[in-house]
Image (tube, rainbow, N blue to C red):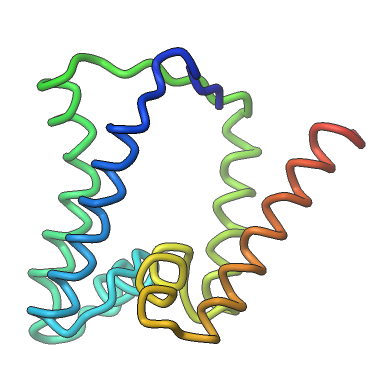
Length: 142
């Protein structure tokens, strides 16, 4: 994936981060739920009674929002420098990691760190270190 640094604006990044933080805060304050995507999706797949509607709405919002953004701001240009097999394996590894880590980057990194959770700080540090190591190996050693 490449990023057009000339088009990067700190204001839009700040606004996006604020919206993510606001959505996570609203979900925990009004619904008592953590905005961890892997947990929300996992709960949707387990079909817990009374939990399906909000989980489906949350995941639906994640899927629809890029299209809404495209309608408002114009189409986005993205480039992913990997094939489908690589993306499939990477997704599988991330999925396994979220099970072993008892959550994902959104649950630990956004919600856990904001609650000053030590477990989330360790998990987020582990996620970041693994990401740094992966980029280093792929870009410099292979």
